[in-house]
Each structure stands twice: as structure tokens, then as C-alpha cells.
Image 1 (tube, rainbow, N blue to C red):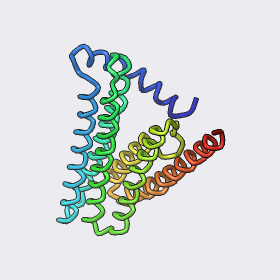
Image 2: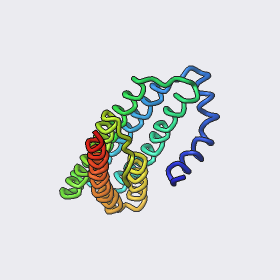
Image 3: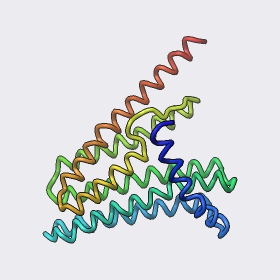
Image 4: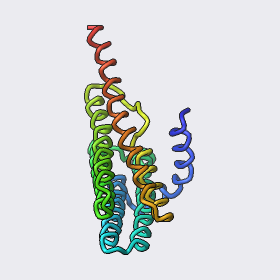
Length: 219
């Protein structure tokens, strides 16, 4: 059992009673997915507000909002686990639900990283803003390669920086940066995601190449 599966089982054990209550009151996985997206939009608004405060020279207030933005990302990330678990427990899985979840996941990452980009832009950290764009690019490509692979009937979950890791890194460095008043924590997180997410995308591409090559050789 890998570490992700182990942690996932612990979290599922904790949240399953709450999920059963949600099912009883009529909530659906698609609603939970939408609520998670709303949470990420809220975090983005906090980052943008922090960016504007930085531009006006109100650093203490700005860093407080950055920390709160990170905390909201962690909270919204829980919804990403709840929706899939709810679909299985409540027998509410659907093809559209899977598409809805994947689509809003991509939007969630794009909006939150845009908010962080704005923080760096207003702080005058141009190069770190560019690195944040590279982190966004890598994040999207990790998901894209997996989606294309699954369309070719290839299981493609290899790599170091999948979505759960990216969410945790983004949230944790935002919280630490906000608490310490040091943007280098946020910059370090973006560098880590930019490097490892793009490596993961290329790793998945190589994995697919090897699988397809074996398939072609067996024809």
C-alpha cells in the first residue's frame, strides 16, 4: 500500500459518517464538487485581495489574507475527496459526474494559481510569477496526459506531483508564507510544483509511449 492510499483510507474513515448525513439530506456528488470549486474561487479572491493590499503597501493585512487563502484551499480540497466517496456510498456514480469533477478540478487549479500569480505580480516578483505560470502549465498537462491515456485504454497514474500533492503544497506554503510574512515560502512551493508537475507530465508521456510501443509490437 502506497502512502497516498494509506492517508486516503484514514481520511475516508473520518469523513464517511458525515457523508452519510449529507446523502440523507439530499446532497449529491455534483453539488459537493461545485461547492469545492466555489471554495477555490473564494481562495482566489483572497489572494487577489492580498495582491491589491500588497500594491498599496499594507503588507501585514496582505499576508493574513494569503494565509486564509491557503486554509480555504485545504478546506475546499476535502470536497474533492467527499464527492467521489459519496458517489460510491450512495450509488450515485455517473459518467457526467466524472466529467463534471475533472472539469471543475482543472478550473479550481487555474483560478487558485492565477490568484497566486497576482500576489507575485503586485509584489514585483515577476520571475516568480512566470514560475507560477509554469506550475499551472505543468498541472494542466499532468491531467491532460492522463485523460488522453485513459481514452486510449491506458492506466496512467505514475508521477510525483498529482493533484492531491499539488493542492497540499499550494495550501501549506500559502499558510506558512502568510504566517511568517515571507513570500519565499510561496515562491518555493511554486518552484516545486513547476518542476515536479512538468516532470510528472513527461513521465506519464514516456509511460504511455512504452505501453503503446508494446501494444504495437504485439499486433
